Image 1 (cartoon, rainbow, N blue to C red):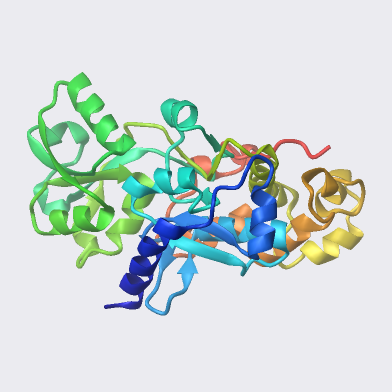
Image 2: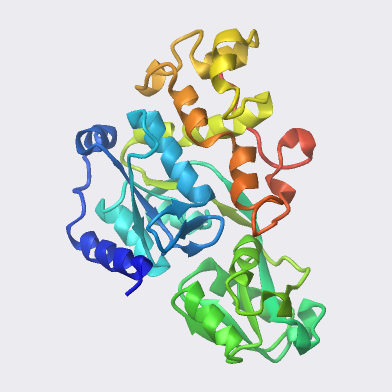
Length: 342
């Protein structure tokens, strides 16, 4: 058994006896009493988002977001326990209180928000559904997949989007359904399906795990909106605010040019009023969240700003080499911006 299998098995058992659900208003108190944030992630194979290596080390954009929340609440980004979850178990784990929040590439949808009584606290990845195919299949566009067999994960918005798109465009297909991305990729490599569909960011990362990644290509079409972000239960507005403003702080830091390297200096020297408020030099904005006034300094010192996190795990400097696209700042034509800090 590898380190990854052992950890996943351990946490799978742990879900049965996870931390009790905090009463309304008490999630933060429970986290502080426990001395760690419990963060639900993928099973450790989402390269660039939440990856677990054979030494037991977690990395990725979602992982760094969890560390940022721990830095906000506990002043220490290392005080996180990561719980790897299959998609089919993830929402139940959050509902039961086995985890404090989910950060595992779950799409924000109407029914999930309203029926499951969850709050998406923001979006850390604007993505869309695409298709990964083997180059020698000779397919250049999605319409040429009519009649194909397509690998897809069960119980996901991806499965529903696939059905909607092919029905709307009068295309035939055979779904090859699996429980997770590992099974989907194994089926694709074994020739059990002609294509694998998932979020394009996930496909770019998954392609790296194939034996011959250069033999595969992602088709150009995007068939859905997939806003991915962290999720909390609706029973604790204070914890939701901390989770949300931690994400906003990462984006705001990039907007203001605040980096992991210069945050301490800017906290002392910046004359920009909004930077002063964010970094705790003026006002009581930390106190409004029940945090120390320099909470954002702790966050950015630990993980950097949003742009640094993206570049480190997903961007041109990473193995994934994913273009930021819509995940650039609003000032650069993207969708990312933080609400005003005032």
